Image 1 (cartoon, rainbow, N blue to C red):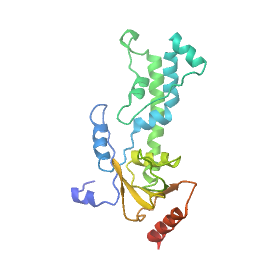
Image 2: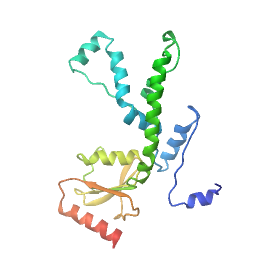
Image 3: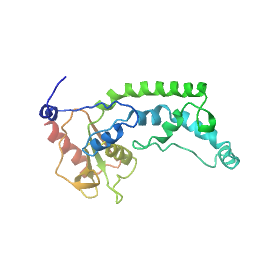
Image 4: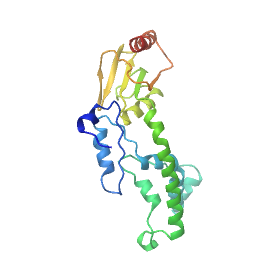
Length: 227
């Protein structure tokens, strides 16, 4: 398939798949695209947080149990261990996969290395099957609530708003306290004109403490978008 830069820019939706060996720059290019409002679906991030999360934690706890001090804390449920996998730092995934070799060089025996490779392969297949679902999920996010001083949205609704930021989705919040619409722009909120839904796949969410101006904002959004 051949196309020109102009024809590519004219496409209403754009999706790019980056394939390559470890270290060639896939994550670096993806990070550059994220800076231009692209959503980055990282296969390894999805594998580590969704399909290998429990095996990775089991491995970490297995190592921790060899330390008497940590063993007592874990057995008494006095501490909790969790993964902190980031798109730009997939260390826990790489540690789980490991490398073949002698233990004196930090390697794994063949049977254990093969077992982990098989688990990773299953996770990789499952993650790739998730791609179409992520493509068609909400392309625009509209929230009714309150923006706090730390730039998050108040309450449980804030989790959805933070995920929209992470995914570089267009994010709008009607702040009931300030009686105005705001749009997230990379680092901060900016008051904006009343938005219009432009995509067939959008997400609407918000506080359960809906006030009169919040109801009016919802009505206005739908009337402007679907009249």
